[in-house]
Image 1: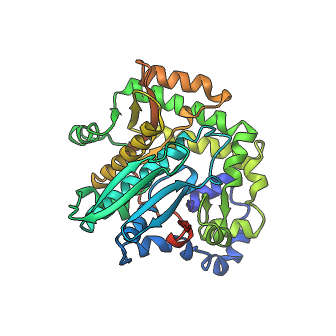
Image 2: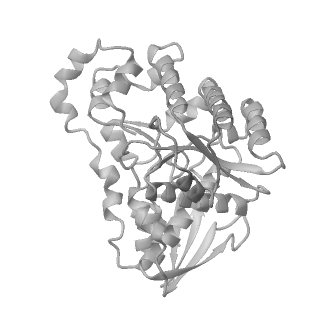
Image 3: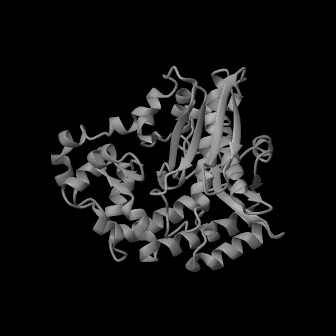
Length: 368
């Protein structure tokens, strides 16, 4: 997630490092992690229909960019999807609900990519029960493209302030086919407060926040070596790292100017939100979570097709003790009949976002 020069100066609390940063200008210009985003350019370049679909699927959104998928090719036309047990978020996602939603996003993008290439996918979820594979997929001939597949390479999660303009009613109606859309000022205002308070709870609870800090990849070398997690890169940030201004210690210091400015920046970002969207399910089974992931992926592709941006802000849906008041308040507002809110996001008109790092497909294949 490269940050702008303006944002980063705000994070460090002023311009006192500009002279030092300027001295590293030539160095910084070489620090873009091209290898880590190479999978975006390789998507669709495989002869095997399964690998071709998987090359798009691995670009799907997922929590903290953990990419928790492992795939086993089976025979000549099948595969099974498994969850990588080493990729989880025990502090903020103790029941792997969000991880499962990410796997649902992966499956939907795989099916869409297969259809775009003229292949069908016969998908069976949890064929051996919840202790085994997430899904088994058998590929066949005769698939038809879904128009949303054309948006896969342009899809992003936009963690930026949105433009100060409302979403036209016609576009809201299209989004409402997939998710509940909230545009009325009263509900939007309430959700701004809820999402900020929930984010603050996570941010100000050290062992919860540390989980995110541990997953941050600082600079080109770390991003290329581990193209997952939360990427902090780009020429300007690389310069700040080189002069010792930006590091994991400063990111965790609640008393630092940068930490306090990050809070103000997040508040400003949420305030620049014209609408929210939510996905709910009547129950909260693994099948519900997979379905929610598939729907979230389609929602994200739909916002892309409509020229809109989508940003998940689901901290209030996390299931750990400190978050309970926000969880209950969010469900009282959005799911009063006792349903489960699986995903919550802000939607609006945002800037263009660079692709996020991904592991190559070969790193996600297992054998045996």
